[in-house]
Image 1 (cartoon, rainbow, N blue to C red):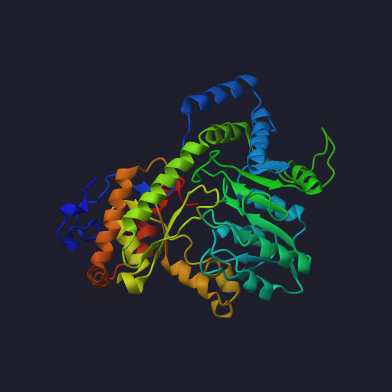
Image 2: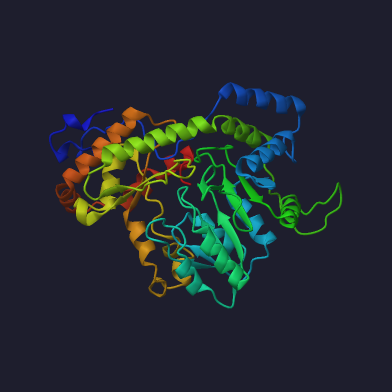
Length: 427
């Protein structure tokens, strides 16, 4: 690492020709591995058993562990969270229109559109950046059949108010809980809210199964339907009773998931250490605000999200990100530019008709910072030093970038996207 203390001017920054602070990319979500030997033991066991998929013993154990940890009666493991959402949406009988935040990963909206359901984009609350219940209430129409909330960065939605709206209008309530495994709301673990919730165990999540997902619910009938649908509709050896797809998790993924669960406390402790260090070292930096977690709830501290106020900083979020990327600090603009400004939604529905002011502001100001077990105190300190330097020289850096006609979108798409896809860090 090259510390910025040795740099006397903005010209020493990598984006202007200097040496990057990090020799290798520092990712927002590099995979946590857990106990390698324990995973290899499981792999040898499943290979010896020659039971690689089709609801094997590791998948069954993984489902029991997830259900027990979040305090629900049923867990159905899936190959990823997107497939989990797809199956849950079909099992809940959603159709017509479903209200969903635009400030989320594109899969949340795509899965609805893929199933022929119209995602109705809704604004979010200014603090939590999760669905705004008042905005949801205003969006309910004659074709609305459900609400799909997103527990963003581990911060749960206003579950109580969304539940009341769903009950009042006879809507189904589903939660995308991809970020919120291990988190609680009012003392109750995420996973037990609404009709069902869907977790992600993708490689970039703090608890991973290489790639995996899980649908959790307390509804016995819904769980039965989910199990049928995720296995082609089979209700017996050769008896198909309804429509289904191949939505099963395999044994190798379950083995990795179980190994991750055994190191869960360690992963959370590292995430919390990094989060607290970021908060300490960035406190008082004008225009930068690390989004806080509630001390009264259980958290996974998986995402360190920072609000960059361009007016106070004297530099835009995108310019901050550009400087960071050049230094090999691959901060992420989660979630830019908002689903409603992506295809196919941007073309099918004019943006001017979608008034989402909080979403627009968040999409222009939010950054997530590197964390996880691949990031230690020295890396966090160097990132914070870089951010302090950038804000201190903000107007000067911005002017230099404008002089170069620098475009962050072009820079990231051209130079980094292929490598990032190989690393599995685009989700």
